[in-house]
Length: 214
Image (cartoon, rainbow, N blue to C red; front, top):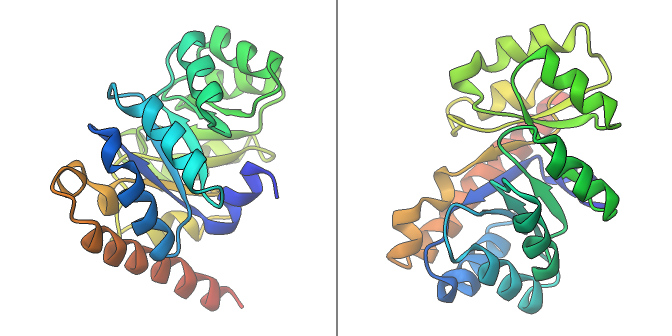
């Protein structure tokens, strides 16, 4: 199963900003126990690279994406640390081309038709829609999907348990990114049991939605 298929399978990606790489193992254990063995570790903190390296070394069952990748150097650091996917908040052609030249999957962020067309020019059809709620939410995704029927979106930003099902019920959404189950305060205070419980609740929402579809 490639990394995009993994995201499709679980439908939900915990978006993590981790301040201390010593918390990476506890976080990974909580997510795995909660039924969600994947994470997007964002380069918003200095601990991102070492956290990716720690998780991929000790938890091979985890799929780890690097998020908030803003430069080719960050992409290289993430890849060398073991990340299996590069995710960015916007579409930087230099970063996209660099990742593709290295043979690595990349999911850049978009909010406009022009950005979608630029992504398509690189052969990319799986895109991050960010910031989702601030950019029109599911209504905007429906509007963008009309002329770009082959594109699939990973909305991130403002998504929580109250609107997760609204997004995932749309066939053009292949996964959602969310941070409510992995809030920085919970990680900093090492409340990994609470993270596990929140993750289980999130997985339950996804599973309930799937049962309704059959």
